[in-house]
Length: 347
Image 1 (cartoon, helix red, strand yellow):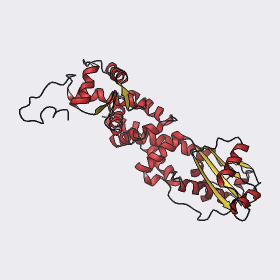
Image 2 (cartoon, rainbow, N blue to C red; image 1 turned 180 degrees about the vertical axis):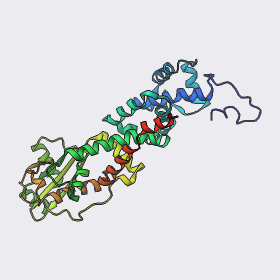
Image 3 (spheres, rainbow, N blue to C red; image 1 turned 120 degrees about the vertical axis):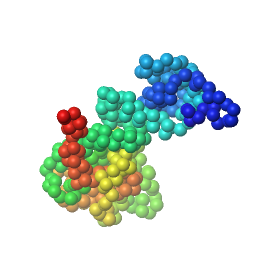
Image 4 (cartoon, helix red, strand yellow; image 1 turned 90 degrees about the vertical axis):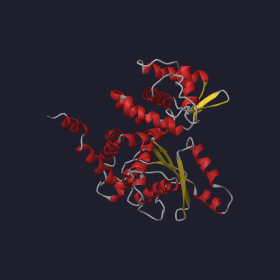
């Protein structure tokens, strides 16, 4: 687009770009612009805002001489990666912003690259960088694996080592629970009264009425990341399962489902939910790794897993595969990137 400007019609001479920048320099500024606007989580701007972003990019490319207003003209006319709608300016498509932000991390960030990726990795709102990381992984797969992927797998290994210590880790049920519990900040099961169950069955009340009463009783927000319920015909109770995820890890796991589908667990152990034994009516149970927790008794462990599985399956929530995730981490630790770099310098 840049090189073809003004050559589309016969007889036209190739005019200088408004900013008078060479294509490589123009793109370098664009990469900074992509990163700064992506970091700010904005794709649409008034004129003052977009000029400020261009000025911010200009400060990082001090070897280049151009006017921010001329650069904006090029973005609108010479290389129409931006468009004007009314008084606002926006990227022609968000994927363009993501692409140039990803190239910035790969090419321009240099010694700040690791720090930038770490900040994205730990950012509560890192969902906005999902496509940036996806594109970055395509540009620099090795770099992605030894940062974002490796960091998540280390966190998973630490979780596996430090949780459910009083259970037999070789047991498939325990491994399944670890994958279901990882990246979950809070998982709660609320039980109804038997009286409410009968009212629900006879259409005298609704699930939402029962759920609202329980969340109010236990001072819960009610607006969880995910929610499911189970009807226990044998115990005559309704169980509501609420999950709140640790969002930074959930984003990365969702990203891995696209890039490394073999690391994601798609198998579910139990087909039927069953029912939880000996639970109190009208009660709140919090999932943890305490052996004395009613959800972790021999009778209830499998059913609790299944309730969590059904919730994950219903809402299309991804989780790691226990064995393959740890095997991949072992491989990454063996193929140390620093060691590979030293081999290049060894002569």
